Image 1: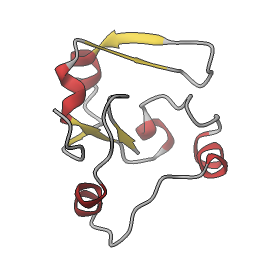
Image 2: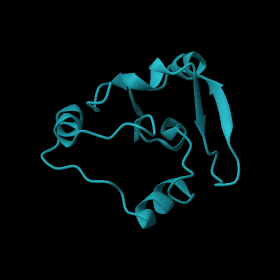
Image 3: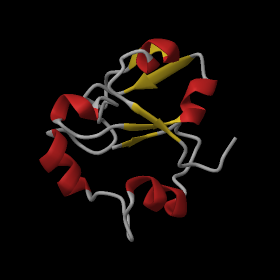
Length: 99
């Protein structure tokens, strides 16, 4: 799982290097539902709870808070970015080019 700010975009070359893969692509809505049990766009940034490695782009921590949908499109959670960083089960990485 790659976690990034909504205003950023994954750089394919950087993601391939990070994941040590020749090819990377976005998961289909069906695969997202299969792996997480929720619809695309409502996946909380805690893939590690599902046994999914969770890489977080360092740009995310330029924000004081992060907001995400906790499995439902009509609910939002807002937490301090530093609290999310301190969970300790995420892997800090760089896979976007936006500043």
